[in-house]
Length: 219
Image 1 (spheres, rainbow, N blue to C red):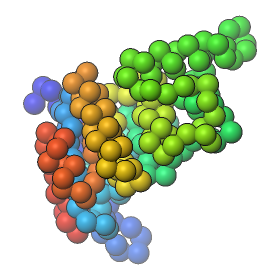
Image 2: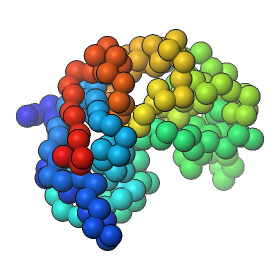
Image 3: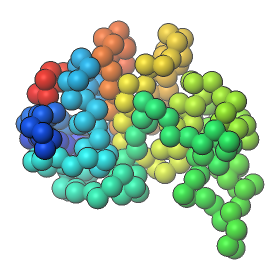
């Protein structure tokens, strides 16, 4: 379909010890869609996401992004092409501010120096755009778990992610924080961002997903 942004075709992942993590998986993600991938622990959900994000390589099968087959050589290439991922374990530096974490590796510069004021301005503007109530000058070490997750999402948005993978994002959240995250997900989707939402909590799936794919024993 013309609105398909990401397509997985017969994705299989077999590890050297013979373990089959994924077998012949076919999934389509459309623009502005929240697509939930559900299944019990060990079903192969996270492995599949790592393949999309180029952390791991599939044994066979093809991935198409915006209609073209991709074969990224690492996660930075995925990020640079508009695919972002929020991991279960946050990839933040506690001693850095929110703004520093968001722009790391893509800092605004003035001459040959990092423009710290511009970094704060751009990241605070981004937070306001998505109604994230967060002070970007605070150190990450002072944030709640929910706020750290927002920083991770802002990191992907700062790099113009068109596809965001959320790997078990509610595992560490309270019910109220979970509801807030689902509101954020819907807002992002309405703005055209495509979201892959990994979970095994059916209440959340029923509340927010447009499409659902069930993975069981890698299939």
